Image (cartoon, one colour):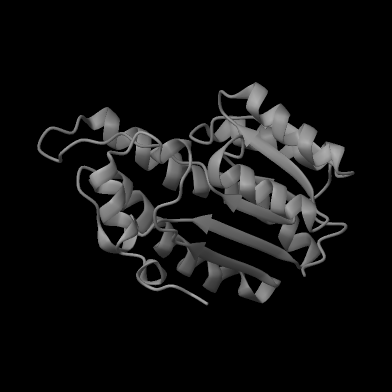
Amino acid sequence: MVDLNGRVALVTGASRGIGRAIALGLAQAGASVAVNYRQRAEAAQAVCAEIESAGGRCLAVQADVRDQEAVSAMAKLVTDQLGGPHILVNNAGVLADQYVAFMKPEQWDEVIETSLKGAFYCTKAAVRAMMREKWGRIVNISSDAGLMGDVRRVNYAAAKAGLVGFAKAAARELAAQNITVNAVAPGIIETDMTADMAEPRAKAFRQMIPLSLFVIP
């Protein structure tokens, strides 16, 4: 329903899970897609192979979004090989769960820096190309944890709440350049990240989804 032919999308953390699904969806809509990954090179190449087998263009690009120089190099590589980027999806995120009383500073830093600082670095690196073309779409993948909180995840909840504020402020700055900035806050999604979640906890999350309470004819 959306025609993205001629557009270039960069999706961070796209080797698996939600990022992978987003990359495939954007490619299906016609966009050329840069699949960012930090460690899972084979998985990222598999995403690209699936896109290319369907006739699309794809580039797997390694970068730790916590590293500004690596992000800048990634943006340049994407521009040189694909063009753009016109679309940025800040999806990269990690978990480092622990009760706040016992959470180590490095657990806090890893989650905050990946989700929040990474979004800042990637947006900063990509937005100038969008400004030159007077067109851009930036989507930040937040979480319901950022809206409601979550046990043993003060780091994750803080990072995801920060993405909502980041999106609102950036949207105000960039609207005049025809660049939209949004945040999406999914609930529980069956991905590799949630595969190890205990079933009682997963069930409790599922029960919070309104549509799960009804049978839709």
